[in-house]
Image 1: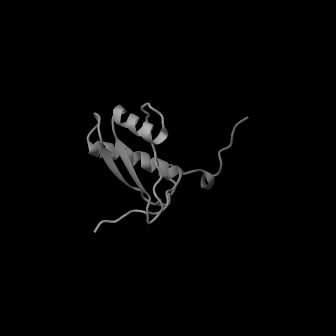
Image 2: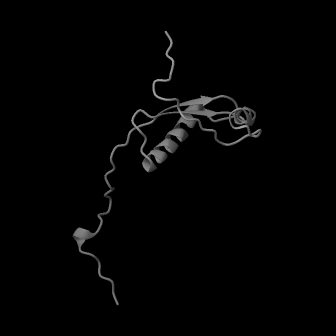
Image 3: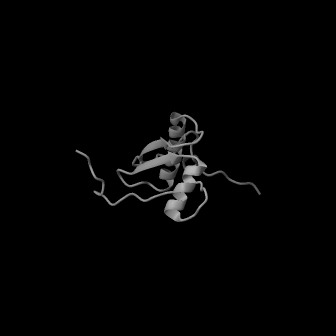
Length: 107
């Protein structure tokens, strides 16, 4: 038994990528608090790629912002103890943004 190929008009064409719709962008800041991390430019590239991958799975709302802080175990342990009552370091802590309009602006 042989398999028949679909007609040419129904076969995908080589070299043709599906058209993707533009997605909203996420502005982000990188902060290095402590620890031995790569240069901020390198970190920005890695974080940017991670954000792009996440946005492909779940498009962000317009005007989305993100701050990423790189630190050491001692500092993250302090934050984990303060905010989660767990006295040990962790890989990731995340905090929700405040409600819209809650930011105090200076003079």
